[in-house]
Length: 199
Image 1: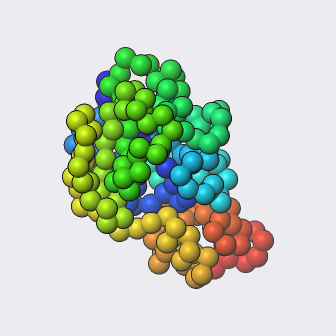
Image 2: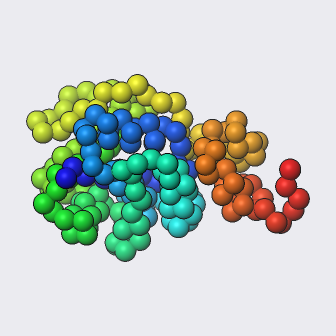
């Protein structure tokens, strides 16, 4: 079986995430893509939205995507959320005999040698790199797969900033599948449903 780990803050998940995950699944003929929300990513600030709420949003965002599932494994791992620990834990849970892949953006590939025990990461899973934030794939070392795809506009940070400024879920680019949840939980500066009349 060919499995792939797709980690990220997913704060919130958006169409760009789904575009990348689908492209990887189709291109590499993956049997399963595991979306793994990060508990405390080491290369960026800790997500402002609680882990369990980000997990819930990812479940809603992937509900209609066959061969995609969500793992809460990082809730059981020490912080910060080093990728090597995640990969090893996923292999222990689902079987090390499978072909394991690990999906990252070109922006992370550019700083990959700064990652915790990065050489071991390369030994434990096949890295799959996709263009992101205007960063091209660039030179990839032997054994690393470049995923050629058109970049889908959209960033979680931009969505959060737009929501906090305007409160308009649609204009901010929030996925239709998670809008009710974002509204009901009062995320990203919105007032929780029930605390006042909603329109």
